[in-house]
Length: 144
Length: 133
Image (cartoon, rainbow over all chains, first blue to last red; front, side):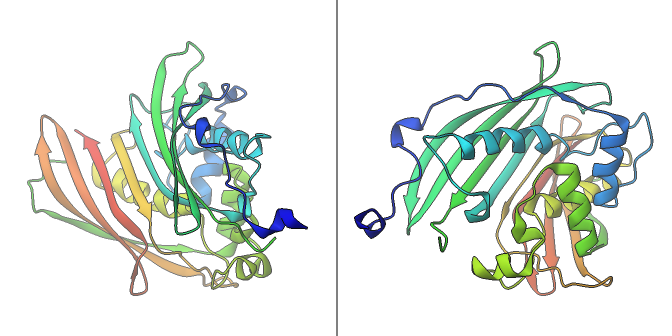
């Protein structure tokens, strides 16, 4: 199988700059925020804003859409989250309906790993910005 | 908070268990098996099951909320994920320690530089939070 003689690059370099469709709307319910907060032991009472990293829920959905894209096709288990930054316009509140729209900012290959820089714009039901979530994903070929 | 640059904030110590990672996977939607399954984690070259990087960043955020005195005051948060937090099986888990120093106070915004460690390892690179108020 000649195809295995070289590791194909994860994504065509032309994908840099591509913006993916918005993720499915995510309802921010009290039950879900509570579960997210409890998992990290974060004190939370109904009416409180969601914990700061909560928008990763929609940002991660956007990253999964990227990974599952037929032109990308990488497995989550071969991906390391290299860096994550959030800049908030406002806290997330229960009742929000959030979507994330991911743009591939950059693609690099370093030492056999693919470094994918992404920015997800997280917006509410009105399309107003809530936060920006920048993620760097590091893909290695894995053992498969 | 009314700190000045150089102020050391109270260090926060948190415990992470495998059960926490299962709960976090369910809540966050990140079901990467390296955070659940010892065999998969080792197969990809990790020393064992590791916490989601976002789990550790959530702990840094938890400390930031504590220092801010109220939730909803974090306006920026970020870090590099430099070393894995290896979480052993069992109820004891592993401790993650979040220390913070005020770097800058400017126009109502407080920039906090953090040091997040697990054992002897700094597990986050340049973890930083900017707090309002």
